[in-house]
Image 1 (tube, rainbow, N blue to C red):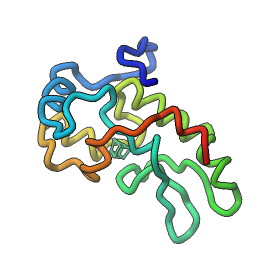
Image 2 (cartoon, rainbow, N blue to C red):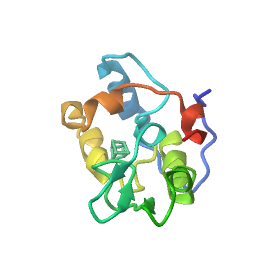
Image 3 (cartoon, helix red, strand yellow):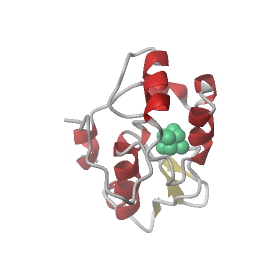
Image 4 (cartoon, rainbow, N blue to C red):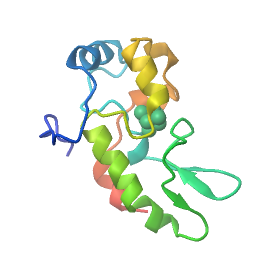
Length: 128
Ligand code: SF4
């Protein structure tokens, strides 16, 4: 179950509530608890084995394949750090690409739009 009103530690810098509200009005699927569900549903692999949460978050390397197993990467510290940031509406953990479009309220520029719009069930993220 997603937290709809997470307690914000001082280390998180969430997106402004008016931007979140505007995005939720824009979403084809209607309002959702989180801005992005990508780190709860997918990984992206480079040819050299670096693993990222998504194509647009290149600053955070969440693992290295095949040095690590998929399960180790999926359940690893960096993936969980990114998930925690998104659970707190904080796009300052490598999500600058999307942060730019959110802050400009240019929601059509968000990539990949089908993933940022569509909720998955984060409780599945412990399964690999
Ligand atoms: S907010 Fe954007 S950059 Fe961050 S994980 Fe989601 S789709 Fe990727």
